Image (cartoon, rainbow, N blue to C red; front, side, top):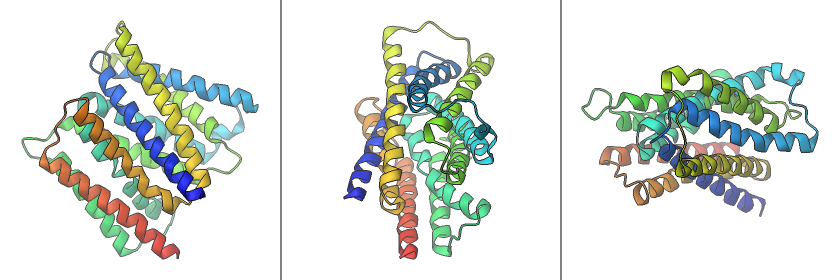
Length: 286
């Protein structure tokens, strides 16, 4: 029963993330990346500050110097910067498809940096998944869009975030590390203003996109945290890929995007290899 509830929570989190991605994609039509990052982080940060105050958790403590916190925060900041930039420059379906390789990247990084054992079959799944990313990118082909490399930056950063999360001691809470990541990412959004473009006046519909994105991120954070605390990781991890299903549905039904055949093939390879890697991990655990 616990796993069933956790699976539903994970699926809800992925739906919320997909909705947030779509809202950011729409906001990027009228606002520069730096402004989007700063405002969405500020709105989401308010939610976590309320939680910290309610729980009596100080915002400033020696936990900030913890190695895991530093790695997680840096990964969150640069990973989010890369992915949000990708969402503002390339189609939602393409960015979402590439992001599905991130769990495979975590498997590889955990083997390389944390000493976790990964057998030849899971290494093959990782390789196949990254081949799927190359099919979507198609470097050297006429369809290649260099802006899609921002999604690769996002994958690298978010992989570092997940490694740091695995290393976190139990006494350091999710709201604490999330609040600091949002604060620093918001500051980075201000700093990149000269590069991403000057801030602009915001019309009513764009405020709807920004507030909606921030609210969806907060819901996703809560849901995914609850899922990971209640269910077995091996049982719920494959349901991360429902994010791609939701993203494709939103992109096709509401944004009029039509992914080409290579994007579909690459997505299938990434998701299929990822699910196999998780299944293999569960078999080995038995």
